[in-house]
Image (tube, rainbow, N blue to C red; front, side, top):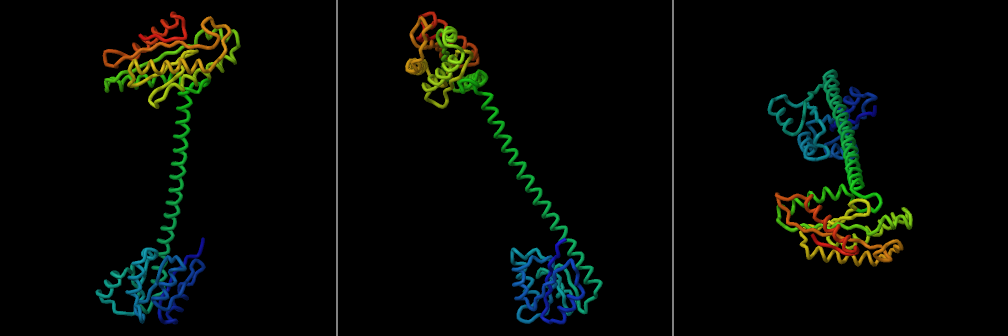
Length: 328
């Protein structure tokens, strides 16, 4: 165990010597001060567990020294025991306590009483240090737990994002589509604003896979997903893989006219990809058909009706020659 520093303050060297001889112990580092000013200086170099302070000293007496120690943030919690030969009148004792003393010792000193009182305050010092150490350990554990909690939340968010993305195209998946559709339908019901849904299907995709193979087919899906996504300009709009070669775009607060403009951008975007499709009877490149439905959500309708309506429109578009769109 590390030795504990205590400060003894007296203007008479013989008194300091007596205190030092009585208190001498391997557990203690005894530091001397011959005046109040020197005592204050010593506190700059040591962190004392206890101060034994003589009351009757020239220039700066014990009361003034104690008051200055109590007024300093660094030293205000150091216990001070006054050592005095002065009268034991209550007024003097109360003055000492008012100056910041926690106890009194009267000269001539009784060795047993001195040792006993010092021992008590050293035990309190040990307990305080132990408490501070445990507090630091607890704070470190709390910080560690907060860091782990932050990492866990970050991991959970990444997992949530990954669970919401289609593994092939890196755009939102069907699960995310369903959640978003429900949320936007509820919002549209509250605000009574139109909600548009676009369903898109790659034309003759089975024939594309048969002609080029599934690896090229997967690349085609990625490029089409990216091309459709470029046509979505607002953060509130959502493009998702609906299933297989089908995609869906949820357009909150978008009327039919606004949704048609987006479909036209999508048609141009897909055309600009220039993905060869030698097996297509529609065109020599990959094309996409679109179905559009727009509704103002309300409690008498459901998102399923909007999806079914857009799906009927997509079916009509495919029966109308493909590479086009139909509005339901």
